[in-house]
Amino acid sequence: MSVEKIEIEALIKASSDKVYQLWTDPDHITKWNFASDDWCCPRAENELRVGGKYKSRMEAKDGSFGFDFEGEYEEVNPSEKLVYSMPDGRKVQTTFEEEAGSTRVTTQFDPEAQNSIDMQREGWQAILDNFKKYAETR
Image 1 (cartoon, rainbow, N blue to C red):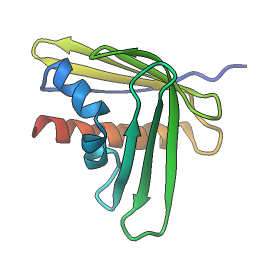
Image 2: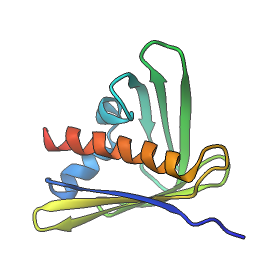
Image 3: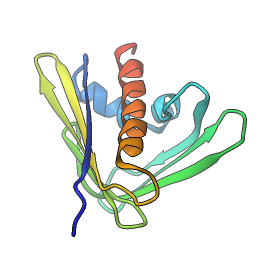
Image 4: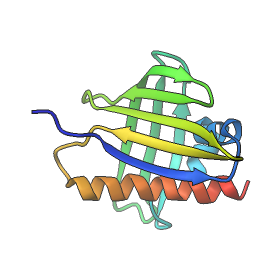
């Protein structure tokens, strides 16, 4: 039995080229890649090519908890689509679609078994919402 993918999205008031650049540049990733103000992303790496790795570190600002996130790219279409697999085999796809001067960012991902579907959706959506806020002020 296969589990349905989780989907999150946001409409960002910026061109797909700008959104893609802010989404993929490690200098920007460290400024938005966390779900709440008591967390941070102290480092990120991004090799934007098929077979390249995406790596980031998320941690609580008080140092009480943190984790590394990693994926290997399977598809890289600049300003349009990114697909990667995580080490456990789960897949993530993010698309960037222009809509009347804005860009719709949609991410679909395979859920993990440790946390509830709702918790995973809420966490990833909070990160995307943080990205939207960051992108719209640049």
